[in-house]
Length: 88
Image (cartoon, rainbow, N blue to C red; front, side, top):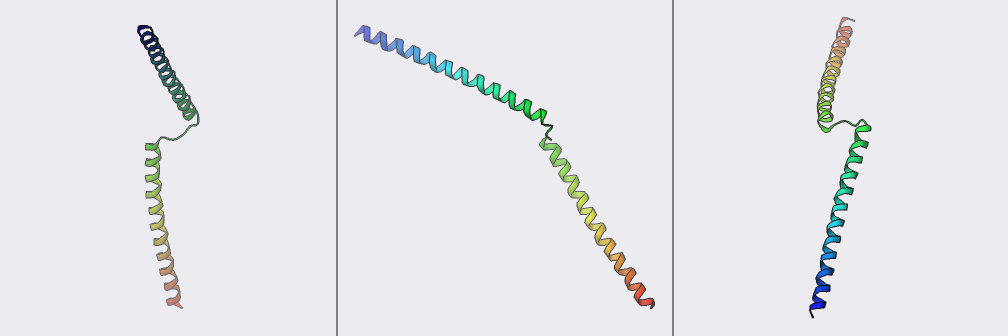
């Protein structure tokens, strides 16, 4: 009985060591993949989220201002057209 227990105990130790090794390898692979992805992203010259949001806000503001100016221009054109028609 003692021999069986010793074999089972040894098998459990080997299995535990194997799982620990697999876990370590998994962490190492994750770290390597993360580093590789970060390098690819940095080489891709991508914009950070904060920069994108800031630029988006600026573009929205400029777009609204442009729409306001277009409406103002149309109003001026219509007033000019009315004045010409009244002079005739």
